[in-house]
Structures are given as structure tokens and as C-alpha cells.
Length: 114
Image (cartoon, rainbow, N blue to C red):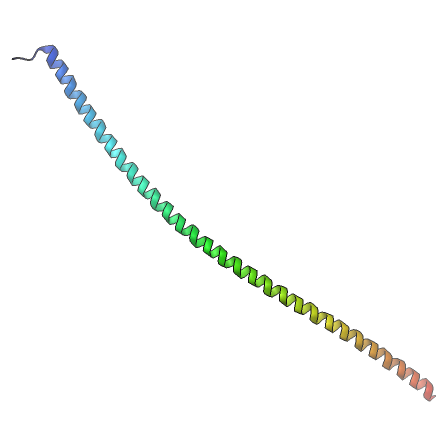
């Protein structure tokens, strides 16, 4: 049975539509593959960044502990230095007092001897 011209035109439209759909499906599959690849790359980047963040957090924590230790040590040294300075001031005052007493005795002694 021969195909009527209307049927043939409809058949050709169906073939073109099918080819068009197949091409569109192929394009969409290609896009999906590209997006999946980008997603995988993004996930790898995120994983690497998370690792870096953990390393930086660890470094920050280590530096914070070292800072706190240094502050504690410097505070203790400062306290010791202040105590030493106070002792030196006290000793200086005592020596100045002794010197004044010696000067006074010496002067008095000279006066008494005359």
C-alpha cells in the first residue's frame, strides 16, 4: 500500500522530531556529564579546603597555647624582676642610711675629738 502524501509528510516530521529529540537528549547527557565533573571537582576542592581549615585551626591552637605560655612566663619574670627591684631599692635605702649615719658619726667624731 503506497503512503499518502499527508502520511509521508507526517512521517518525515516524526523522523525529524525524533532526530531532534535524540540530539537534544545527547546535548542534555553531555551537560549532565559536564555538571557531574564540575560537581566532583567542587567536592574535591571542598574536601581540600576543609583539610586546610583543620590544619590552620590546629596551627592557631598551637600558637595560642604558645602565646599563653609565653605570657605566663613573661608575667612571672616581670614579677620576679619587680621583687628584685624592690629588694635593690630597699638595700639602696639601707646603704644610704648607713652612709648618712657614718657621715654623721664621722663628723660628730671629729667634733668630739677637737
